[in-house]
Image (tube, rainbow, N blue to C red; front, side, top):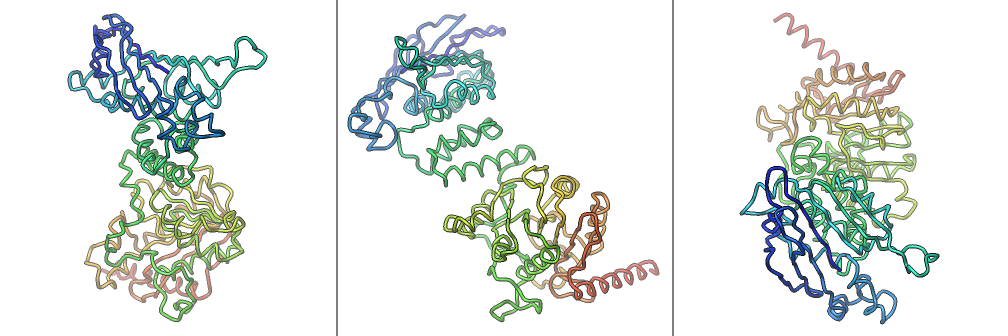
Length: 532
């Protein structure tokens, strides 16, 4: 099997033979390299200032392939003992060829060239030819994978037997790619997509393959329309690895859209060794519900996180919701509580953090659920800063301790995404009450409860935001406390229940009374400020 890479002189006067510098292979020499499954040769059929072509020829050793394959992949032992020796591996470009590209052109693959760094960083007029490419999916899939990357694609199917045209085409194509590309990008496209098209890796796919995929796909795979297919095939359809790749790719895409680093978004769950922030109202702890008297089912005082989940569940039940979104689901504590109640027939948890979703999947034990239980739950990765058609059509959405993690300039986008685009009948929002922070003895003055909180609202600020959002998008809103309602500073957590197009039901009689008391306290504060 072989491949050629050709370029021509540029308008800037750079000779085509610069290709030798970029590949780190001298045009006047024929070089050979040992690989795990044979021997690779690099030579130049032509090398003039006007046009230069580098060829990579891979000689596959079938015996070495069998010894190293040990039954893995199509080159191992797919159907019979004879198939170990009689197969297409020596003749068609496949995952073997991708490994050879990485071994022989490693420096060029990473875009490094100390002699000509500016040439390595600039696009070149390239022509890549692969006479025999294994392509499960045919010429149509070849075009679907390569054209979105800026290549002009000529993919001609190879007849199964030219003497018997009625037999049709084989799965192999003759491929020609032309386009203006950086050499490193072109090599990375081939490194990822050759095994994807072949759809049969010759080696065991280990977890480190996810890192290889993301490293080689950086800058182009995140937004590729066939991203899911590429990840699934590259990772040999291993579900756990594919799910991990999807999460990390989506995080990279969202980070790029936000013009930030992925680590900035992937912070919903602290590192295992990190200590909790002082005064934080984390949802960590047991996953049991709390009673209305503030106690847990085992008789101990309920944590604030448990009381918050109980208040949210109470509001959802009062609204008659059955299909619920938990937006910013974190580790999946609320999702777990929702699944315990059969009245909630569908529960979707969404978070921007891939790490949080990984924790949620583990806490929910998705891999151990019965088929019926698993059909009620989904975990999605996404950002509330953008409209998402997957969120439309649900009865209710919950944003529990979410809004305070959003930069204030992005709050209008969040409101539009939830109230304007998704438009569930009910929206339940909880957020810390900044006034209550003085009651946290471990929280220094002026500090917010969690290092990632962009702000924390007073009761009046929360009410103003909620009422503006409700008026703008056709909702009414009712407020209630969560946790002990201090007569001076209010509750530690405040809750707003939005109802689309109708008067919002009171959360409970007790909460209504507490809300009225809160209103009286705020009026008193306003009068005192006016008198001052």
